[in-house]
Length: 405
Image 1 (cartoon, rainbow, N blue to C red):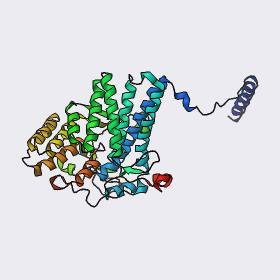
Image 2 (image 1 turned 180 degrees about the vertical axis):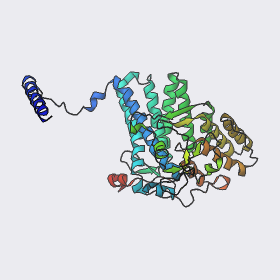
Image 3 (image 1 turned 30 degrees about the vertical axis):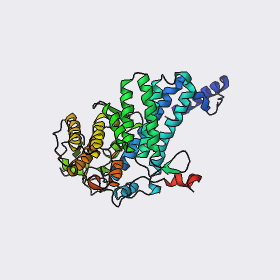
Image 4 (image 1 turned 60 degrees about the horizontal axis):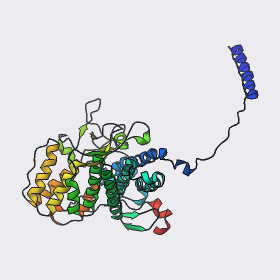
């Protein structure tokens, strides 16, 4: 065997020498691709896909954090930051990733729109890409507004967090005008739904209800995930399937007997037939089933939420019967039995539960609890009493932004 190997090596060396002698193997490095090389109409679909991808990435990662901050799941694992969130603490040094991801989604969408306008010029208004870009800008700003304590735009000073809602309102209004001009019924409804949600966030209930009224109950518009790469996966699925870091056990939904199609979960048994525990070795592990696979999408806008926006607007105006009727319309969509609530004191908890179920694990519950916690009377929600109510400016942002020092 040694002789054969020697002969093969010799032959290979001779062949390599002949190749080197007969070919020019020099390689010229063209250097980094210049930014303006992307200023072509053919590159614009990729640009908008990038906006979508960054928003989805932020949505997936944040869904884990806000599920603990907003009482949707329990921490059943060993992650340090998540232990803080579960205890009601949100330290600035624990939210570097969440802060950066949300702002990346916003920045990429807002600056991408500028590039779209420059590249498409007169074709901008007719392009569905422009409509989608404004939608991503709106949803990215809504994500920030509903979760951060302060708005910090591109290295500027700290501002009221509602600045993000105002930017989102403007973006959705732009998307609506484009979608209507392009006669795109689906994106028209998405823009109306997005704008209704941020107008509700701003407390403009009449305008929110007017937008919501125009949206069909069947509408669902998603943040997209796929199996192509790990970055495109729904990370919450990994942490509740491959790992057992988050559990439905101990939440209000654990008493639901898994009969509500809006809040799907199930028990997991060990090979010995006992209830599985989480990664921490002690918390009972009830597995969320809303997102069963790594490519499961997270809703950004839903027609059923529009019914609940209208219900809350009605309830705030004193129309208890109208609010309950709208809640039951939403429940009928999911084939659930109607509820009864004859008084304001009964209707408010019912509304809070309906919104919690419809928007479960969609990054919306934390802000609902925040805004209701600030209210007095029957609409007050006490879960956030004594707990941090929003994501602070991250330690990295505070250290690198001269306007915050």
